[in-house]
View: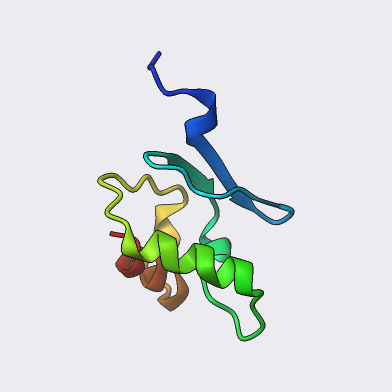
Amino acid sequence: FCDVKEEQIRMMVKNTTDTLTNPCILITTYYQLVRGKKIRKEREALLNEIAKREWGLLVLDEVHVCPALSFQTVVTTVK
């Protein structure tokens, strides 16, 4: 139970990319946070916004894959 408002929960998954509010909880996958070679401007702007924020808490699932380079990139990018 918590007092987070529904509009503060944002999604960044394959077919859904919400704009970020302040403050917010962002639910996404590792792969959505890795910058590919072909990237839309809207997604690039969102990734830049994610990188510049100080999140305070990062909850990871499947942590056994964290040593992989792509996952290390995510962990070091998100503050």
